[in-house]
View 1 (spheres, helix red, strand yellow):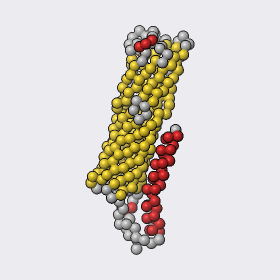
View 2 (cartoon, helix red, strand yellow):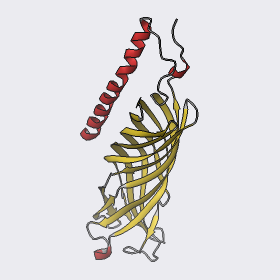
View 3 (cartoon, helix red, strand yellow):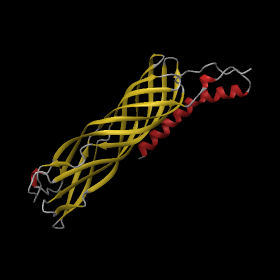
View 4 (cartoon, one colour):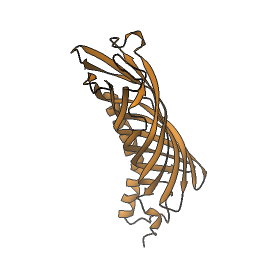
Length: 263
C-alpha cells in the first residue's frame, strides 16, 4: 500500500512540473502576449478507453495441510479479457513525448471453475474446482515516447499497479454432499507495471493505440476451509505475473491548436 501511494505521489509531482510551462503560457496570454498559432499537437490532457486480452497467467494451488495427501497440489493457466478507461497528460518536447497515465478497469478470466483431478471422497475427476476472479485493476505509470513521424508515437511506460483478486477451492460430492466449504479469499495484489506500444494520431484530437502491459503481481493468497468432518484445511493460490495486450483510443481535451494570436 505504501509503495503504491509513494509511486502515485511521485508521478503526480512529475505531472505538476510538466504543467508548469502551460501555466506560464497562460499567464503570458493574460498579460496581452500573443498566444501560439498552434502548440505541439501531442501535448495536453486526454481521456480514453481500452479493451484487451489477458494471457499467460499461471496459478499454482497448494493443499497446505494435505487434505488430499501428497498429491494435493496442482497448477493451471488462465486467460481472459479486460476493459477499462484511462486519463493522462502528455508534454511534447520536439521529437519526444513524456507524461503520466492512470488506468482503471476490470479483468475477466475465462476459466473460473476449472476442473481438476479427483480429491478425497469424490467419485469422478470433475468435482474439485479452483476459481480465480478479479474485481478491478488500477495502474499509475509514467510514459516516454519518440515520434517516428508527426502522427506515430512509439513509447514505453512503467509504474505501479494493483489487481483485486479472489480465489477459492470447492470439493462437492456428486450425491450433493459438500466435502469442503468456506473456501474463498480476496486480496489486493500489487507490484511493478511496465510495457510499451504504438499510438497513432487520427486528426488533432483523437489517437488510437496498441499496447502490451505486464502486471508483476506475483503473490500468494491463503485461505482456510472447513471439511464435512469439521476439521480445518488451508489452501494457497500463487498467482504469477499477468500479461495483457490491449487496443485503445484517447480524446485530447486541450484545444490550443484552435487558438489564434491575440490582437
